[in-house]
Image (cartoon, rainbow, N blue to C red; front, side, top):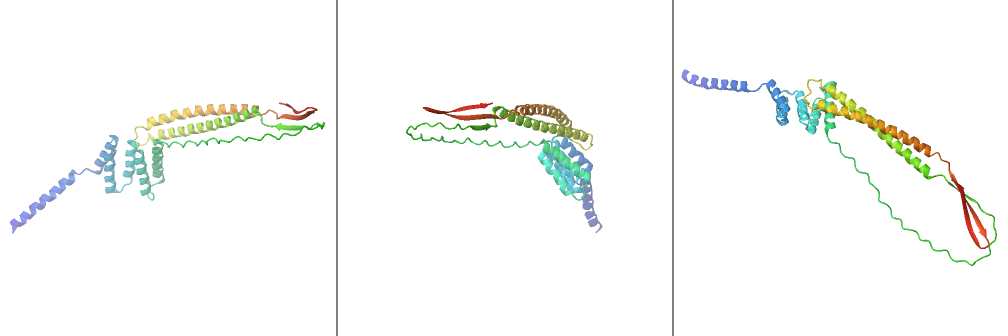
Amino acid sequence: MRSTALLFLIPAALLLSSSRASASRQPTKKAKERLAKKACLAGDPAKGVEILAELYVDTNILTYIFNQGRCFEQNRRYEDAIGRFREYLLKGEATLSDEDKAVAQKRIEACESYLPKPEPPSPLVPEPVQVAPVVQAPPAATPPAEVVPETPVVAVVAQPRQPGSNAGARLRIAGLVAGSLGVVALGTGVALNLKANSMAADLGKPDNFNRDTDSSRKSYKTLSWIGYGVGAGLLAGGTLMYYLGWRSGRRSTSTVVLVPTFAPDSAGALLAGAF
């Protein structure tokens, strides 16, 4: 009996020691975090995200979902990164602090800014309408009649629109368009400058894994100064064109006088006016 019990105890001891050795070979949470970070920095987001997913399943810590988004963002997979950040906000809607939510939303906006912008649709140009010429029938011939002198009738026709006023209106419209574009360019420069300052603040955070943040910040800074210069030039040019158009449109209205004339053997009209 003792020999039989001893035989049962030996396999049990071997099984216990094997399970302990297998557990000792399993990497710790700290080691997994290090492996995930190394994979993300080495350009292998698939491996890094997989390790972070295992850590989230084992611990239910939302930070691992956020780090999945950062891993995708580091490797320029911005659409996948946006999906992970939104999942982080969705799962932590009731538990995350306002500061954590603001950080995730900021990462989403940064990823969206890197995505290509859709091109605006081209404006539709209407086709010219073909108008058929109207042919009038010649007047019927009438027998000659005795010409009776009549009192001249004076017709006054005012022409408020002159080529000068048309040119002035075009200049004013061009000035308004240029000024509006200048305001838009200045606003774009301000927005890019704010974006560069925001990215500069992110560089000091310890959880910033993005290697291209400083390069992007410099690009935004340069573009903001370009926006300031272009906006100021357009605004000044638009103001000048509007002023010149305003001066050109101050011309007075011209007057045309049509005076019929009659003679014993002819009839006609005399056109006179001031321009």
